[in-house]
View 1 (cartoon, rainbow, N blue to C red):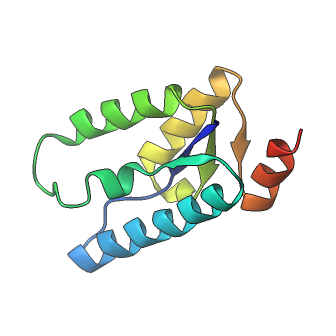
View 2 (cartoon, helix red, strand yellow):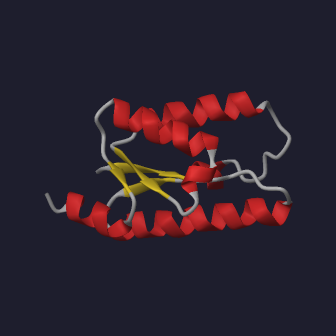
Length: 111
């Protein structure tokens, strides 16, 4: 089974902004599931850890998770997130695919 990392913004100015980012990532994760792959959604894994640990700890950890996946899919507004930009680069640097839509992922899954 392929594991696809969902990359996108997590942090926000308010708790509501963070929750909206988590929900957006979960929606993308559901699309990954419908394509037949297992989504890895770090947003949902740590959604209630606000203020725990340093930003660098979380950035390093999620970057490592992204490196271990078979591919990565980008959530809306991913380019606003320094973490998502770094995850995308790490996945591309090792030659794994990066998808901008569930349709692209579905086509790749069929190959």
